[in-house]
Length: 566
Image (cartoon, helix red, strand yellow):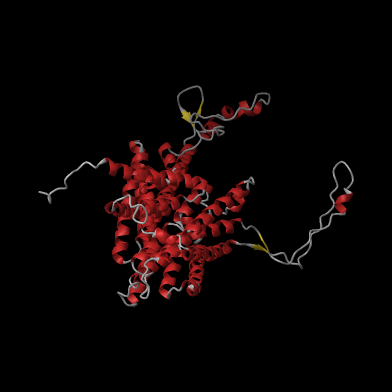
């Protein structure tokens, strides 16, 4: 009888208080730290450390495992939201720059991690794992930055999003490679190294090509058919459209994550591709609606031009202006040309032709239901906010950061060697990530041999030429190149500095798989504590510097649009 069903028992008040206080403190502390120090996830990690096994052990072990599983769902939804916010068109224009920024953010921290082998007494494998963790970028910081500053559709936002995602994908691929080698259970074979990388490349190449060649024609036909059906039936298609997008996006997310997991690739990368593919489908459907509205407008305009009629006032028959002029020339021309004293009235017809009305909204020829579809260009994000955002932001995302805190040995983080090694790691990794901003530095070279333009004296209309204008000297020409602006480079570099969810995840996975446990050491997790103590300062410094930089730019009117290239 006990195997047939789970016996229901009402939880006691102590269990209710523990779990409710845990969830409430996660949200309250995260909200306060987000609005004061821009590092809410650090507070949630600390709450996980305090409530979980490393701290007071308030939560039972089974509940911590459940929180870990639900928290990973939150991480998948964070990455999925990033894919939905990405623009396929902007990503295609900035793909080379994004790859360059991502490679810089991977290679420089990895090289600096190997340079610290002497002071940290780490092996090559441990240095490799540390570099993989510290080459990642906080996706939460990236998306919150884009929402706060409104740079989602700009080129800077596209480059930042794609570069951060590429860094995290490479980091996760590297962890999958080295996790099997941590305790010496497997040897370094070609399959271990090549499989995660090539499967990820296959997903990144095959899916866009398939969408372009196979899915796009189907979407265009389906969008036209649905628009015509909506026009004939006159039903409110907003809620129905959101439901369809919810079903399609969720099914696509589950399919890609499942296939990537079984194929050996990162399921987070598959979640990002699912979001980007859903966003691309939305863009293609909007383009189909736009082209159909143009065809409708052109057809209606031609129809009205071919059936222009005038009212003679004598009978009910209506004739065209050409026929009226041929049968009775005075009908059209006598009142307007022979008597110049009469006011010139604009020509009016029974079908409403003539000068366009002042109200532009009345002169449009796009149907109302189709025009509503064109206004909703970000319908996938509207779907996400309607069905996913509340649960993800209030439950799943805090659970993920708290689950990271469950795996951090807090008793070892406040030792002297761990603190100073963590600060050294944080400083060097911040320098390595700041190098990513160099790709956005543009120089203006002023050649010394270029012809100098001397301003001419201009005479004013009321008097002679201004004598001061003759004495005005031409500007000096410098031969050294001068940077146009450092604000985009600063924002990109500081945003890449911030480590977050992927850094904590890689550190926890590496420690769990025994990468930071050497054969001649009996202390487990010492190097992972160094890594975690280096991730936390970078997270706080990166968040604060990004928001401070943007707040400084926002003090000058019009500066935001100049420093945020589209």
